[in-house]
Each structure stands twice: as C-alpha cells, then as structure tokens.
Length: 292
Length: 309
Image (cartoon, rainbow over all chains, first blue to last red; front, side, top):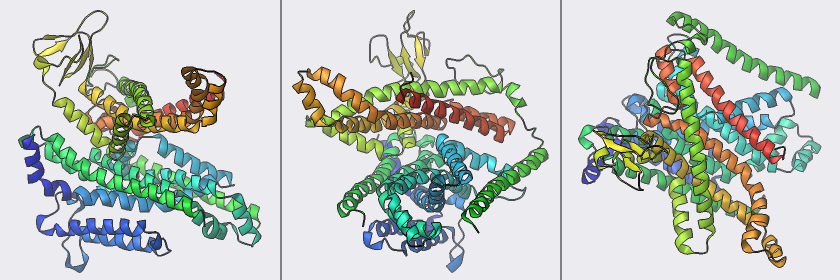
C-alpha cells in the first residue's frame, strides 16, 4: 500500500494534467479554473439570462485556445499531449454544449405533427440510445476514416468529442421531450390565438417553460455524461481515468492500482456529489416558486 | 404557402438531407474500401477467425469462423447480463428495503453506498473490482470462502455435481470456474445496477398509499399477506417500467468488459475489425444485435404489462 501512496505523490501532476509540457502547465490549470467558473456562473439563477449561452461560448472558446495555443504568443500544444482533469472537463462540457441544440431539435422533431420528421427523430434517438457508447467511440476512432475522402483527417480527440456529443444529443432529446410534454397544450393554443406561428410560439412560449421544467433532469444527465466521458480511455485518450491507468501499468508501481484509483474516484465523487446536491436544491426551489 | 405545402417542403428537406448524408458517406466508403483492397460484404463471417478467446460455455478455437467468434461474444454478453440482472435484483430489493428501514444502522449505510456508487464512473468501479481481484493470492494460497469453493487470482472455482475443484500443479482444476474478468464485470454490473434498483424499489413501496395498508389491516389481513396481496402488486406496476430500463442499461454496460479483456460482443467485434478491416459490417452487426436484444426485451415487458401472457 505504501508504494501506492508514493506513486500518487510522485505522479500527481501527470494524473491531474496529463503529458502537457511541464513549463506550460499553468495553461491546463487555468483551464480548470475557467470550467469551474462556468459551472458556478450557470448554477446561479440570477445568471439564467439570454447572455448565458454567449458566456458558455466565450469561456469554452477561451479554454480551448488556452489549451491549444496559437494566438497571444502561446506555444502550440498538440491534442495528443492533453490529458487528466482538463481533458475530462473539456470532453464533458463541450460535449454537453454541442449536444444541446441538436437535442432540443430532436425533442421537437419527435413531437412534430409531420410524420417524416417524427420518424427520422425517433430512429436517431432509439438507435443512439439502444447501442452501447463504446460502439460509437470505436466507430469514431476506427470507422470514420472510411467515410471521408482520402487525405482528409480529423484529430482523434475531436472525433471522440463528436461521437460523445452525437450520442448525448439523443439522451438530451428525451429529457427535453419530457419537459415539452409537461407544458400544458393551452400555452401553445394561447400563443396561436395571439397570432404567433409555430416557430415563434415554440421559441418564445413553449421552450422556455419546457427547459425550466427540465433543469433538474438536465443537471442529472450532465452528471451521467461527465462519468461516461471515462469511456474515451478505451480508445486510448488520456482523460483523468486514462492517465491513472497509464501510471499503474508501469511495472515500477506494481500493486499501486487501488490508491491511484481512489484518488481519481475522489475527484469524480466530489464533482458529481456536489452537482447532484445542487440538482436536488434547484428542484425544490423550482417547485416552491411554481412555474412562473 | 399553405400549411400543407409547408409541411411537405419541410419533410422533403429533412428526408433529402438525411438521404444525402448517408448516400455521400456510402459512396466515399465504397471508393475507400476499393482503394484499400478490402472486399465489402459478409463473406468474412465464414472465414477462420485466427484469434483465441478465453474459454467459456461455447466451445471455440482459433480455427473456427468469425461467425462463431461473434456467437461466443454474444453468449458471453448475455451470460454476464443475465447473471448480473438476477444478482442486481436481489441486491436492489435488499438495498431498497434497507433504505426504508427505521433502523438507522441499516438505512444510513445503504444511503452512503448509493451515493458512492452513483457518483463515480462505472468504468472506474470496474477497474477497481478487477485490480482487487488481481490482488488476491495465487492458486496455491487460494481462499476458501465456503466449503468446496476456491477463490484466487485465477478466478472463482465452484463445486459441480460430479467433482470439487482442487489444486493440481500450479493451477486449480475440476468443478465450475469463473474467470476474474467475468467475476469482476459481474460484481461491477450487479453492485452498480443494484443502487438504482434499490431506489426504484423504495419509490415503488412508498407510492402505495398508507390507506391501502390500513384498509388491509382493517380487513384482518396479516402483515405478510398485506405485503404480498396488497402492497407488492401495486408497487410492481410502478416499478416495472424503470426497472426494465435499468436491466437494459446493464446489458449495454456489459460492453465495458472490453476494457478488462472480457470477450463480450464488442471486444470480439473489435478483434474482428482489426483483422479484417471490415469495420462497417462488423460494427453494423454489433449494433443490430444490441438493438435486437433491447427491442425484444422491451417488447416482452410490454406484452407482460398488457397481460397477454
């Protein structure tokens, strides 16, 4: 066991930040701060304003530029060197944000009166949810090159990110659909009687109420998604679990697996537990305030 | 434009876009496969697989076909899923009742367990179970948790009807053996799903109004008969739909076995497409098999709920 805590001490930086160049490690560390700031901002009800999506876009772009380098004289760091907690936060947050618009579209599509749109949405949602996520990650890492013109390559991290987001969109669609179903039909009828067409009625009247109802379920979905990003370890990316695995396969640290895993588990637990408590809190406060 | 016209235009656009995307990808895939000299189609299923798979219930050797290798993978997925469902249900009922208990010594640990299991990644739990199993003593120092049962880093050995497992040379022979990969995956799936099933059981029992229990008591029913005849039938109706989706999740999560080398469907699919390069066919087959399993399971539950059985 003591070897285990020695490895945690010696390889702590690698487990947390991956193979990012040592003299540049302030950048992934600052990225972690940016992500946490984004979560804190989004958790405050005072910040649930139309500018919140813009803040997400700005902060996520900032974090990616910070990690990747290029502008502002930052040295370029290839995505192969990204790893640890910043990569986990990036995969989860960018994936969730990217999955949100198609998720809402799929939810609306599934409830559409147009049979072709409904059928396409149902097919997409059920296939994505019926098959294990690992399958899609394999597809992204092994099959994708077959479907695009030769010589056209996309970064492996980006492919995994896209696969995660495409699957997550289907899960989000089901959450948003439950929210849409909870909005009384009278709301849409009232909007129609005021002369609003389908598009404006959806965006201005139905969706805001549906999303508000869905918030606790959306937060829980985010927890599940955050945990599921660990599956990128299987296709050889070094997220927080991947760096831990890379450390313990070193024969020098034979038998150190459990302490290293406990450290990583503590990070995941802290994050998920805090977010799930927040979800319960917000559910109670939304119920107490009613649907304004 | 009339609403009817708009509807037609929107649907045509959606179908056209989906069709164009699939069509372009298919054309590109066809030309790429040709350039790499990979034959498309399912002829590879009849060829010899050439890779070994850890022994399981279905006899298999490297000389067998890819089709057989996939069947072995499917059997392994079903085997661990069914065993996991049984174990998870038993543990889930116990957890749910423990959470409902008025005895703090039962309800508090159950609540703590729930938080730990739900707030850490499943893959991490699987790796922990697997490394714990690998840390067990070797066959010569095997543990005897029960008479006739041997537990060591090579697996779990149970007595069969005809013989008991025993040490022979450096290994344990005889009886029924479960590999560490199977054992770790089974424990991981069962303990994880049990946490969710426990909440479903708790919710189901709580959903039955107190008036029901009181009415049964007023009619003179004993507590056991009240539970069996009044509470459980009503609780089950609430519990079955969410429990079904948990069982399906368990079967999907069995695919994590690929991370520790358990030869389930996705692992065999991975080996197959590494060797043949026929990624599209291999992954399409795995997808279809999973969809078939989950759809037939949903259908079975649906029919059962409508009382046609």
